Image (cartoon, rainbow over all chains, first blue to last red; front, side):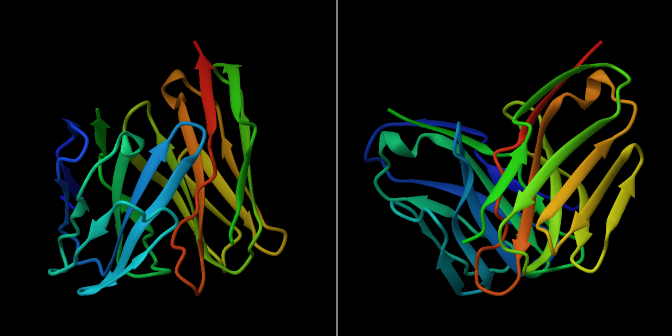
Length: 114
Length: 113
């Protein structure tokens, strides 16, 4: 089944403890991105990647890092999480920008930082 | 920068009604526009994708139209059912640049049995 898989689904952590949220797609998509969703603010893009080893900042990149060493994986790294990073996170992929099939989203990761 | 507005923000109607959800966007230079459904606390499910060269797309009881020049899209839901209750999100993909998808804040839809 074609899908985007995120792990973990739920995570509670403490301020300052480094964490990684994994994202993997099995559709050979070139484009991958991370979004966060907050009440009243909607979905906002954190980082995106046009292809392997090519990443760039989205609208709200502060406090996050990403890497794209392989085409299928695009982990989101929080080096020193803070409570304002408590949010619902989504990974998405697309064959390429402007592709015919649009974007596929993962099921989400609900992160709580205390 | 692309801005997306969805109207209404919330809608509650009895079962069986036909509905129109509206989406407007400020930058008409888009590759395509995608409509998603989101159930509470869940992921996004793609409903319809309209390419910039198309005027509409249909899937079952759903029909989405696109007027790129005026920056508008509508999602039409026919014969609504309680299972249609969800938040509906509109997301144009800007051509060029690096924005990817820009989302509206959604229309929260409740279908009363």
